[in-house]
Image 1 (cartoon, rainbow, N blue to C red):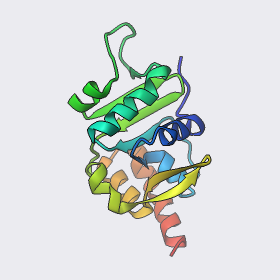
Image 2: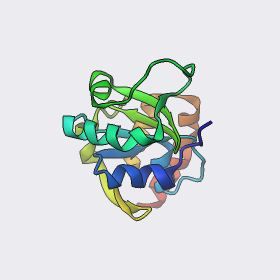
Image 3: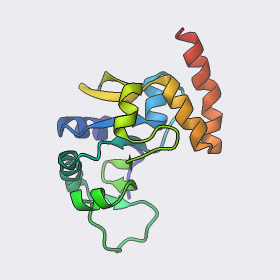
Image 4: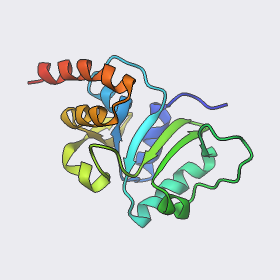
Length: 161
């Protein structure tokens, strides 16, 4: 059994291992003041080989496994797997984590860097996508839950101006 997305443990773990990532999704919304809950941590990660190794190494002790797949299927999250894949929805002993190499409306890590900034979360510096870009990402995703959040995100954006 896994926990819901656990920002308090997952984000510091990634930051302590110097994983290059940008927080997006509900977690980024919460960082901007969104009053909603989320069930996973969504990050866009750098596809640089050294970063893939750091990402795999930091998650290995927490038994990452593909979400919604039957237990017992052979799966190993290592740098090679990360390099051969792109987007991974995982359960870990620390919670649900979505590793995204590319997202609709935003692209990959390098493309999103200009639309992100560093904030301190749980004692660590983490990159978070800007509110403007988060709204674009949610529009591009087009899922009902994303479309519902856009109105509140837009209010946050308008009140920050």
